[in-house]
Length: 114
Image 1 (cartoon, rainbow, N blue to C red):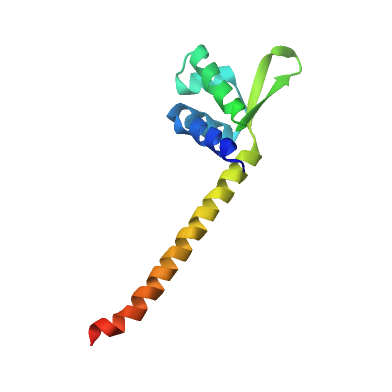
Image 2: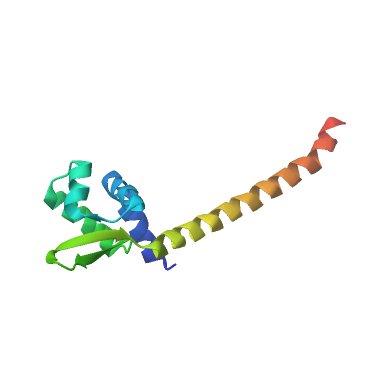
């Protein structure tokens, strides 16, 4: 994932209110008003948070057939897969570092016991 995409994603998730929105959307899609009510946020503030999440690519909005003014928000899978892949790379790095450290420590242990 290009660094700017990762940065945008992490910045979007840095805000607790936006993480709460993501948590609600994990269970099912919601309208903006439903999200605002669930999180006790006013509509303009919810709109700002949704805009950041949309610009980062974490969520998408879909219109409702019977009312063009209503948008339903849902999570997009791809950014979360990219975050997971990035975290797995970091985990692999640290696993290798710790294994190398363990190997080094085990080689030195018998010398120190003498």
